[in-house]
Image (cartoon, rainbow, N blue to C red; front, side, top):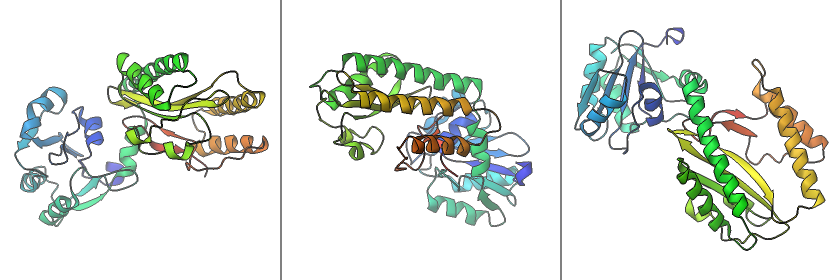
Length: 314
């Protein structure tokens, strides 16, 4: 904060709240969980009365104020700013790239009006810099989510049969994730040239699951993941329905080889864009230029299925 001339961070987004406090995100937009993290001194939590006791158990932060307000308790927050001596300070907020406030814009405007000498500025780059680098504990959560998803992939592919619908396969996969301790599984499935654009909708949105039947000769593509202790994974696997053709084998080998070459490039100091540019050039040389419909080759994971930084060109 000192490097960015910030006197405090005003944390309202549920996932940022969890990351910085250890306490669960709110279960309702009507009852936001708020952290005020000053540059100097101890952080404070401002939470609904109904969440108070749970957060005392979950969070490492001992200073906690509760309220019965629906929305942000403006007067209580104003008093806290004054008590911490930052009512005229520069306050970092969730205002920038891929960040969202956990309170309404009208509440945020009311808070700013109540503290006319304070400057509320964007702190998204600081928040992302802190969240992108994972601790060993966070890495283990992502790794366990990957293990659970991998086991579910294995079961789904072993039980997949021609004539089965994509919806039946999705249900089978999600049930396996739950059996193995995963939470909130999601999956996109495509088994032919029928519905690729259709499936790329909201994560886990039921109407996006197709009743298309698996047909011999087609490829089966599953993009899926789950969370473990609130940390997500997201990756895909492919198989052939019946014996694969020479063309399918060749294409799969190309993608597998280029992917491994990109993975081998990963090391401290290399830019993500360099890896993406290398992968794109390799595919173009092979006669399969990337269409770029997704706008990136990959993305970060953590407390969200997709988050900074994007694996993309430039």
